[in-house]
Length: 427
Image (cartoon, rainbow, N blue to C red):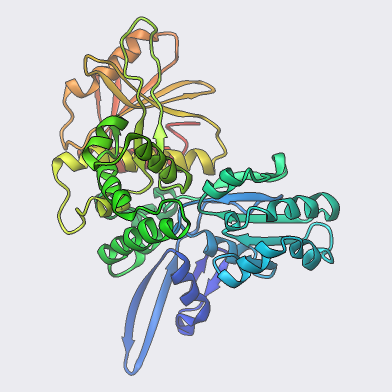
């Protein structure tokens, strides 16, 4: 028997309806078919997610497919729940948002209510606010987009709910099951990890969600232009982004390109990593880098899933994977540190700079299997420029063993991720 996110799963029970539902909503598990005579036993292993159950109301954001609904089912299975992916429910509450108050007013103070995809009916936020204030109810509000909320100027509860995020699976959750090389190719969305057809799942994710659903949300009506932009944006993953160049390559107006990037950020599919200014007197790159939230999604967007990653692809993919793990670690550890990158016009760079309570952490990521001294040029510049900053510098590469070069701790990717989740890199 396996412990499944606080629930005991008996292999002899078979998958059952609950596990089938989990599979559809992004649960994280492996299936092993054991044929014992005429009996087929399905053994299920579920990864324990690191996101903790909150004490008070929470706004839980995360891209589709990261497992928010499964996590909610594990922790809040017996509470009142509204699923706004059900169009009938969404239409009913959009017509009369006050029904939420009427239907939950009877609950005792401290009771929980869950609203899935709450951004689909922004007007509900006023009723949520009323129920928190007048009835002392607690809410789990799950969302995969902030776009509609921003446009509607929605009430975001003014600190009455903590904003938190859920990410694709991490090394900290998967442990030894985490295969870094596979993660570079297919990412770590739960169904990409546990399903039997990662290519098909990721292709469907891009085609049905990133294109069709974004159109259905009326975020963009020109699917052709958005599709062209999306492919160019996928190739821009991990690169310093020049909007004018993307506009030219995608044959889309510059203002539209900026709007499309905003859509990707608001729907949590991508994010900007801002540049950090190391020294005022040094000429430095100031444009931000753009990253997609998952390496598998990035490869699906560019149509590269059928092929092994090239060496040229591996660099940005490895950066994406490392930054994903660091962002998730900071969020789940409730460390509010900001992440940035640094690069000057002489080519010296640092992929990740994080200022902590005890000093700076700087990380350079290379997809090479052998670390070369020139890879650490930006880190050495950093050490020399800020001798008082108590800086710790790390290189991450695909080699088999740790090396120490010029005061830089150079770690294999797996070792770096293990040290990160043990609190040895950032604390």
